[in-house]
Image (tube, rainbow, N blue to C red):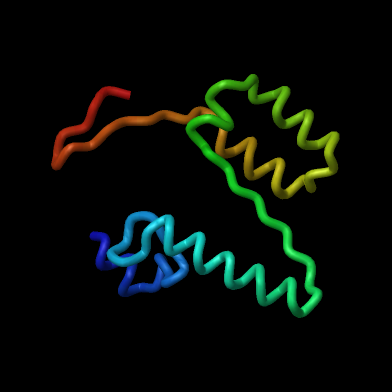
Length: 101
């Protein structure tokens, strides 16, 4: 299944964290280079990193969305976050066994 995503270019070479030779460390190095190139060319760079496990599970979602809107986050991003936060369920898979949700 995973090879399908790579073959069909759904997962790109820019994906890091779970691909062979593409760790979170390689991601940081690649980003640092991109930022340095942009900085030297006097181009602006905006970076947002989210730790999903901590950023969303410990706050009231409606308050988070309200605060983000007050900070001027555009509606498209707010809608994406709202969809992401709505009716989320998590489970763990080990081989063919799934935990209860």
